[in-house]
Image 1 (cartoon, rainbow, N blue to C red):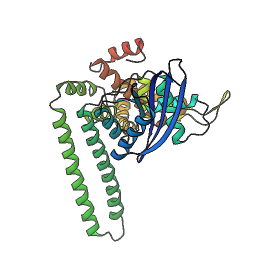
Image 2: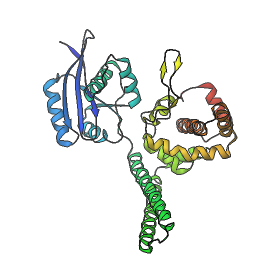
Image 3: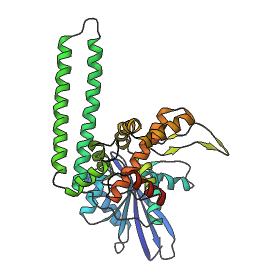
Image 4: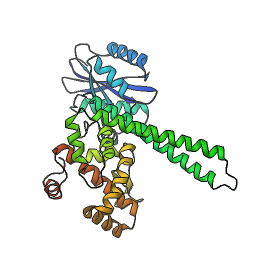
Length: 345
């Protein structure tokens, strides 16, 4: 293959390793995936990766590094590459999984996934990844730390309740559990204060959060969590992408003209986004006529309250995206016009 016009490194990122496939396209649009290797997901592995790619590519043509947005495991490599001015594209996982379904690959392994990512990068014109604003990176760390604390507090409270229900409860155990709960309460308060201090200097973000919290049922913590987990919707181009990224999209098992199994949400996306939308959806169902009507209609249709609540979560998440993109506060009339005129704001 001569006269190379495009080179791509497709990287399947895991917690401890990087599975890399190299591909190229020549001037006759002949596509080839021709090399494969695994590296450690750490700085020494990154250096080895660059040496290997330098050895196996045409130095006169830039290599585009393409990877999935896999939680936090891809971030260190992405920062490492951009610091050295390499071209990086980060793709939402649902795009890659949908693309892999179009290929003839029957067995899904780390190698075939990296090859699929490489082919995707060769065939598509991808946007260059831009580092997320520091504020969103910081808020993501804080909101996730708080989420872990809340989960730990819930577990301790359950243990405390069980201990207190014993015939002969241990006063020492109860005392220690109460101390741990008080510590978590203080730490959770510190995290909230730290969030506020980080947001305070950014007047634009303050306005956007105020717009988002004008949505019935959506509080400041929910707004901050959604923005943190999406990096200010940096990789999101439409509502369908957002729903898929959150894992709130509906999956059905089909065979011919019949449906095998009940439709359910994929849960393949960002679990922090799904979790953040749970309580706001319940609040919206109780207090907002529009969402109450959606909930009642769906429950009367299939009788499953949880399924109806998930539909409201999905609607609220889409609405947050609309509010962010339009930079306008919530309005029933405005929202209706937007929904009628566009499917992706």
